[in-house]
Figure 1: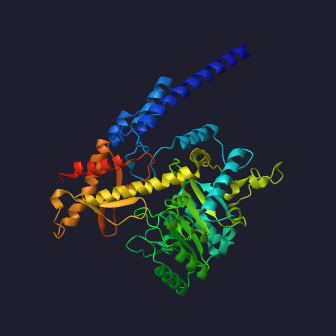
Figure 2: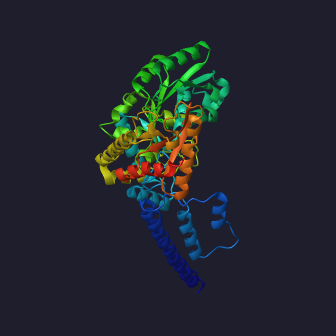
Figure 3: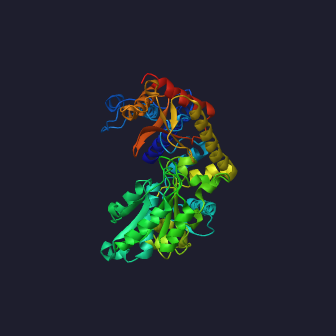
Length: 493
């Protein structure tokens, strides 16, 4: 009887669990997918931290709570979260919701495996390699290596680590004492993860040499070579150049061909941080932005940005085919990477990573690619460029809007000059007053829930808006609404 009772209870619990999940999936579909991507709904339901704390029951209790209460919590979590799939969300370098990628993410979570070995992730180990091969081919490499990393910052750390290891393999075992004073080179417009990588690896942020960029945000090759020669004359050891394809603020693309020639001349590893702009390689019309990328030693590419696979989907790609990635990162843990397994252990890719447990990030991209095909993804990229052009043309036509610079990518940077400041550019207080405009309009937007867009200062330039045009469901109407909303919310400033 005891066994029968236990079996009966487990069946009952199983049925209850399935019912709970069914309700949760319905909430996700209605609140996060349908409403979260509906232009008639709010981008966010903004609350200040203190107010949000009082609205949410975040306390963790001794006893468990009812399913009804848990479903209420699920509903509230979505209600008060930012809807990044909304057509009028452009606050980050990612936006939009691809349903096929979402399906991949949900399957990934349900299976809950790690990419450490083939025996626990056979499908995904094979799938990851297919994707890495496809991405390498788009770069122009027929062979190579790679791995999916937990974000572009980690990809950039891996690049710096490999560049150092290639020249100084003893440092893996003997540490920093064996190294000369290293120097890495990158643009003033680089992502901050390059400095973080230097700090993390013990190289030091002072040894990241920042190279001057031109007015468009591109690294100046002549300045790069001058800085390399200067570092050598100081007794430092140059080992890496990190170029950027798609800078965070301006969306600028460094001149890779010229930079590659300099790297070849001086024997330096060329890494291309294409976490933002890499997806332009899918477009026959726009891939010329990355001319010369095939000459790089490594590339970082985030599909969760322009392709909207969902966070996170970050590929670290290598031209090297000598197993350098594994040699650099492996620890040969015998409890995980046994050499006498019953299958080909070359499929155990976990020792290429700096992690042990590594999340499956390939399924969402693979399923989305299967659904859209390469042609469909190309159209998605081209459409983003077309919408960007439309937005820029409208900015130029409207009074009070001024481009910071002509964009070459999908970053549209501009000022809104309210009526009270127009024609007063020569006044001493003009730029100080203009500095205040974007933060005020953003606050009004967010509290209203109508739009979410980024702003920032840059060098001597005071705060300006940065509209990122990547949402696959965005339309010309959304671009018009965006500009109209800025005018509505800023006309009294």
